[in-house]
Length: 511
Image (cartoon, rainbow, N blue to C red; front, side, top):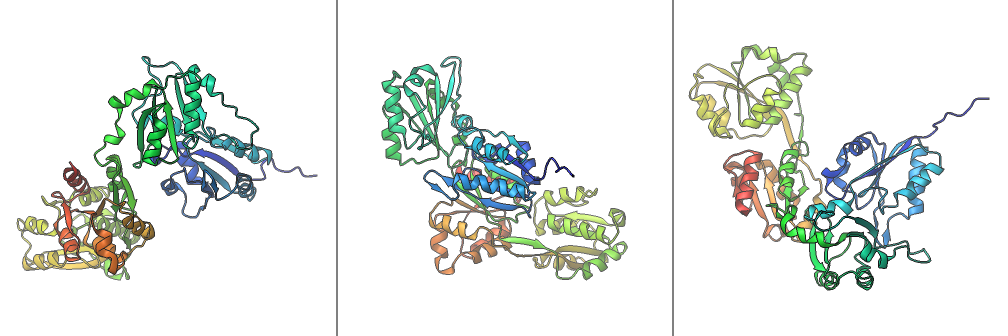
């Protein structure tokens, strides 16, 4: 009789997603997401973490919120087990730490009872992260020697409370209460009745570690009225203790220059990362709404023919990072490499393009001082171009200025499509909703095609109303001119036509 294999199923990873800032997930957490066949996540786990998941992974949202469950807990447990029993690697992505007031213990029990292999991947709990982002250390030698973590929202099916507020009132230096906003009047009343000084400082931190973070500071006898007046809703962490006083000195996150601003990034999904990283580091929320998708040309034949006769060219002119990438990908596809360019000089527009060229082992012979076609034309005036042959692989539709001016210098220019752009429509519904809510502060444009495509995403009859009051930031004059022609009021125009230059211009504008 054959014995059954020890592991008949897949595997479950209960992964802590961290407190809200997607960069606070652990390295091991991202590794689990990358190998997952199924990802099950809720509303406290940042959807931005899904970028680590495979494109073919099954993504299941089980958005639990207080009072409204997309999927009841019992059904969720069954779902996790069922997906694992189908042989899948399952990641249950939970906000914060799975074992701190997140019912991760119940889910782990269900998986264990089903005989499914599992691992627990700890996460950074909002109980420690939210106070840190609000500038509140939970321990400090001058103020306390103990910390207590308490739920403010116990299981309603329990016959009695297991939280003895009267003992916690004076028995713990700093109290951190999660899920306690709804029960805050009772909590403060119990703590005061238990002997805690009514003037004890209290902080309530909503959406901690995110650009939506809101922090209210009061005392045990005032905080309830303050929360009510502010209309502050869950999710929030509550900190009770003398350490709250340190926020005056240590508040760092909410002082970032673009804190609480929402910035729309219209770059292609593949190229948005640098801008998103820089803007996010300045404290803003980035709403990625790529308006362009970069795709191969309709026909490779013209570029293939040019690659086959590279030895006939004197110059290779590259005007964008995309142009470099597509050209060299096709060069390798044709069975050739950089040695085919041994007698060809190169010119690039902008440091990013030159840097991408260096990735393939080549330094550019010409990098103009400014980052547009006019500057490269100026640079070529130092060269003898009469009778020279120039290969210009670039976007299918691009400004004709460069080939025209090089032609006037006596050069023969082969302008060949290396790629083309098409309109993308990602996150359009969210974009329009946020514009209608007046919760978008800045829209960034890094190319003329991004401007044109962005405008087509907006209903024409509502365009002016939707864009009213939104700051428009352009990477340079060409893009800015296109924006103005299409009815945008350009507020910010970078003087250095790079992503870093655009960020600097935005900072200066809001300084």
